[in-house]
Image 1 (spheres, rainbow, N blue to C red):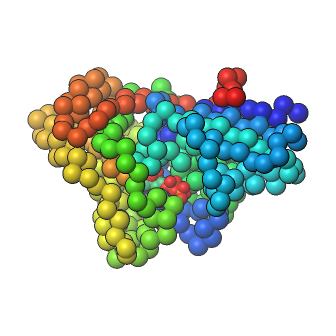
Image 2 (image 1 turned 60 degrees about the vertical axis):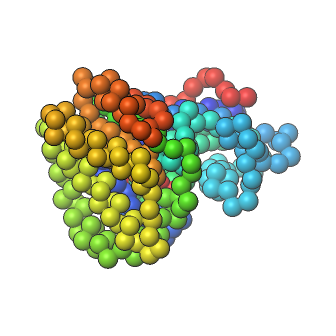
Length: 328
Ligand code: DP6
């Protein structure tokens, strides 16, 4: 058995968001389906090795040793060990090429890479669907970083039916996500905890009742390549997500002054005739969606905004893949 493997996985940006989970928190079954695009330049690389020579588990993240107490990565490795019927100790080295915990969905790329490298190193042979189901249990949004391109996380009621599938390959449509990094400060409340507060918002039942309609509208605009309609839907969805955050108990406030500044500029550019739309996740960094022909201009405009530290241009990308270059 080749017990060492490395995977590279993209983060993804949800056009229609996963927010709130059904009862069993372990299974990470979402309240609704979601749709996303994989991002070419927000990447996690992870090497996993199982070996009888290791006395303890070790996890290195961006060059630092991680504490193993209540460690989600280790819990995920335990799932993999159980599936493979092994109890060998593990060494994991993982690196992100982008900021962590700022709204760029590092848990999506992180758990997708961990799932595929871990499963391969443990000798498991899984289908894409099985990888997606396994990745979902580590972090919900990770299930969408397994397949290629534009992806739907199906609204299943059971673990076996809750996984992501590719709607379109990356080259289907030249949509670009220009990420504006506003601050590298980590958010106070991570998504994982935030999900459990979703139902405390008085607006959550309204949101829930509209999700099926939103998913079909998003699929329709993707199919017809209606950029303006898609952009309007994506932006309204992000604002709705933050309305849920703001009205949860306790409230969740992720928007920084610089995030709001970018939001206002995007609206202004749009009224000046530039087709751009923003979306946000759990954090202060902001994703600006445009067509490829406008990507450079959008990045240049973003860079000029006070508080924007850097921009990262992302094209639609394939999903997770195994690579030969190990990190150790
Ligand atoms: C706002 O997938 O990070 O980015 O399942 O607890 O790991 P866990 O949550 P996570 O939540 C993502 C929330 C979101 C929306 C989305 O990506 O769909």
